[in-house]
Each structure stands twice: as structure tokens, then as C-alpha cells.
Image (cartoon, rainbow, N blue to C red; front, top):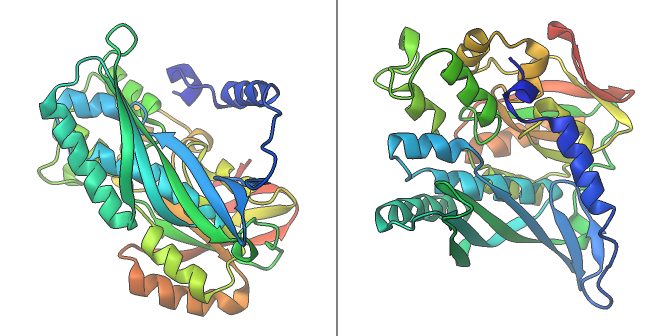
Length: 338
């Protein structure tokens, strides 16, 4: 199975985005000059840049509704935004959410609020507003999205331009699938004649169903990365989301990211790969495969980076590769090139 066959064509999506951007050319005059960005957009605000990014939970909400368990997808909504914002070296400040729903039942919205509150706490941000739209003629179920505001001194923006051959890539473990690739994951479950309520096989997740494992919230990396940025000259930061390892060249297209020692994927990935007969290339360009975030620093800063990350993060952290001359991404032990 492939992501495209399940209904999501990444290359077509990229072309669609280019088509939209080709129609958007106006820029504000005066304070608020656009400053570019990769994972998040930035505008000038005196000595600072204000950072904005927006994202949603995606079809993970379908599983939440199937299990009638909505208390974690709010964490996903915030995580997908704040983890993008920190990639430019920014510290998240505030958040607004957007809920589109066919029938705004309080028993659902209350549970969604619990997840948003937890995500805000983990990110040290305030939820300052939002919008709920009842759209029974457009929405079947609900869709949850949001927008994050962050800030960074202009002199401290992390663009990826400083990444150079010899730099080290440090990976931070993911909590599982996070919030990407769920259209493919759901198709695998469907065509395997399995149910989200079935016990996860082989005892990898004792007392958990397949659906409960798939609903594991996206890990939030804000606190450890904000601490790191204050003490180490970070050359690049990458949130490994939809597109998997293909996210890395967004930071710098003029060097090669060589992943020599990738994380061992959690059992949820091997389960999906086996059930869906999915090849390695497709898996690593659809899912995070165990690495939710990557930090790129010079070799001289590796020890200090580990010291700080290990102090503030409660996840496995390890060197996964290095930067070489060339372009794209390579995983030598798996024979993968992107």
C-alpha cells in the first residue's frame, strides 16, 4: 500500500500549494515586513520577528470519534503548531483554535477542551480565543485546527543556512505516529479487516487497543528546545511530520542529510508496515518512523546539546547522522535516497 493509493498524493499536494502561492503576491507595507521562513512564517516587528503557523489534527479525529475518545486530539492540534514554530528558533506565546463540526455536542467539545488545555500547559502558551463553526452541510463529524503565535529576536532566527558538512544530526524520539499519515494507517486497518477496538497484537502495548495506540498524542518539544536555543548555537531544527525524512531538505537544499543510525521504529510502525505490505521508502516518506524532531549542531556543540536536552526532555535522544556535501537525504543502511 502507498499513501497515494490511500487517497493522499504528496506530490500533487505540493503542486497544489505552488498553484495557490502563484496567486498570492501582495505584501504589507510598513511594520510587518515578511521575513520568510520554512516551517513557520515570520514578519518583522522591531528587533523581533513575530512567527505564525497553522495546522490541524487531520484524519486522526476519525479514530477519536470511532472510539468516542476526544480528550487527546487537542494536544495533537497544539503540538503540530508549536513544534513547527520552534523550528525557526521561536518561543510560542499564544494560540487560537478553529473547530468545524456538524453537531456541536457539549460532551465532545468538553473533551476537546481538555486536550487543548493539556497541550497549552506542555507548551507554556495561552489559548486566547478561537472559533466554532456548525457546518452540518459541509462537515461530517468534526475538524480541529489552530494557529500559533511565537516570537524570536531577528538576530536569533534559525534559518538552516548555517548547516554545513561535518555538522551532527541529533534525533529526539517520537511518541508514535503523531498526527501524520493517518489516511494510510486507517486504510491498512480497513483492508486488514481489523477494528480499532481490537487488542493490539503480539503484546507490544499490553491492555491497549489498536485505536488507543493510534490515538497516542503527538509529543511536544517546546520546553527542551527553548532551553537549548538559549545556550547553544543551533544550526537547524526540523519537525518530522508529513513527508517523513523529506522534511529535512526544507532547512537547506545545498547539503546532504545522512541518517546513519535511525531510531528503531515503535511497534505501531512495524505493525502497519507488515499489515499493509508497505516498503521502507514509502514508510520513511510518510511517517516519522520513531524520530519526531531533529536538531543540527556543530560537532563541538554535541556534548553540551546532549547535556541540555537530557536535562529537560523525557525521551530518547541520540546522534542519528551527519551533514555531508551533496543534496537530499540518505539512509545508507536501508538503501534509501530522497
